Length: 331
Ligand SMILES: NC(=O)c1ccc[n+]([C@@H]2O[C@H](COP(=O)([O-])OP(=O)(O)OC[C@H]3O[C@@H](n4cnc5c(N)ncnc54)[C@H](O)[C@@H]3O)[C@@H](O)[C@H]2O)c1
Image (cartoon, rainbow, N blue to C red; front, side, top):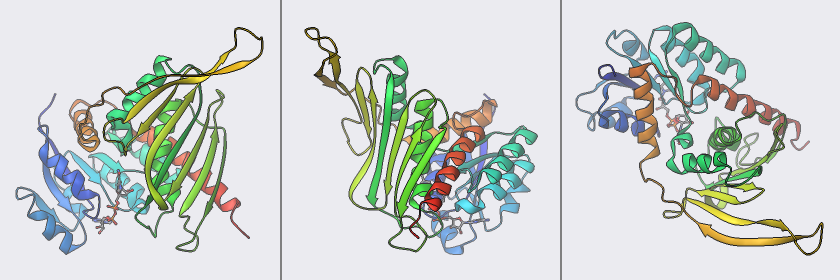
């Protein structure tokens, strides 16, 4: 491993301070810069990071030859342009999810990373969650049998956004996990949604994906819902499993449930409802694990798990689902 990774965080709104806190806390990195156009946000965060330099201008970071990496926690429409500037300046780049607002923009960022030979990582946080890693391990082990279908619920009375609908704001998480579990890309996609709070910005979205292997996936996304749910359910031919991020003790549960062929009458099925168990899941903070992974990749030159290519695959699915949402809008 090389020396310390010197990191700058750009965008100090809702999410950026969480990234700054983690980069400042881990052993392998130094939080050298923080950047936001808004004076009040810089002033507020400067108290927590006395050794960090603060600026309103990204160019100050790009001109610093000592700086290794730039972390972008700015609004999604800015991601691709800023990432290209960062990579062309020879810095490694972490971009918050989703990588970009369109496939064309995401491709520009991936091409810039390839041309510069620098690391590009997308903040698909759930892929670093110990519970999702366990679910993936269980699914890949064959314990569930053949995976028939996966569905996700991401519901809350949550943050209303003006520049993104529930598909892009919430669904980026679910799609990254579903693609990660599936290990393949969907060939058939449909989506329906409704906008109640702001015209043209869906508050609730239902999406359905079909994959070549026979796997299907469904997403229910909403920030206008009485429940707070963050759950994936995986239904296999032998067993079923859930990852429930709202459950403190049983994040992952495996259900020995399904249908067995009846021994007495050929062609008949009987239900099997056997043991239910929850493996222990590390309670390490996913954001800390994600930030440590980025720093490891910067220091070693390794390719991140959620690299630009995987971020691009998520944007491809989001863009196709967005087209379906628009096609199926009320007249
Ligand atoms: N991983 C997660 O769970 C998670 C959670 C929330 C948000 N996010 C992501 O984080 C990103 C930011 O979201 P947010 O809610 O914090 O947004 P926000 O609007 O609260 O903050 C963005 C900040 O970026 C600043 N900014 C924009 N352009 C800039 C530029 N060129 N130079 C300097 N500063 C600039 C703005 O002044 C603003 O303060 C989004 O991509 C979002 O999807 C991820």
